[in-house]
Image 1 (cartoon, rainbow, N blue to C red):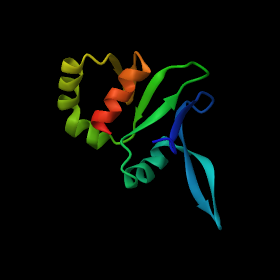
Image 2: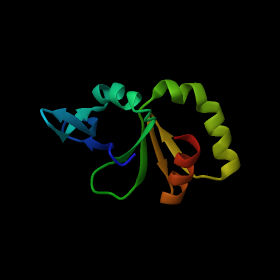
Image 3: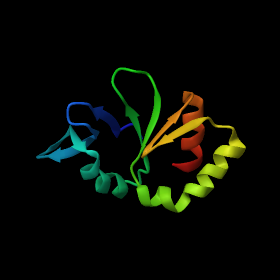
Length: 110
């Protein structure tokens, strides 16, 4: 999970994902638009990516596999209810009240 991170690009009004990409005989970290990075993330089995907006310390995950989310949404929402994990869903963004809540979610659903 740590090799992929998403950042909100306020000048382009889009999410970008920092990925490692082969260039010649080495790998370099580059930003890819979230829609472009989607296939690479799916190939790595990544469903959620840690995300940052501005300089605020928030506990955010970007949902990178919408098909997985749609197929499991009801089970995930039911799990939220019984686990007492506090979250807010806004589009394809999950924001948690604490780092512990985010980690509980990742341990169960990643």
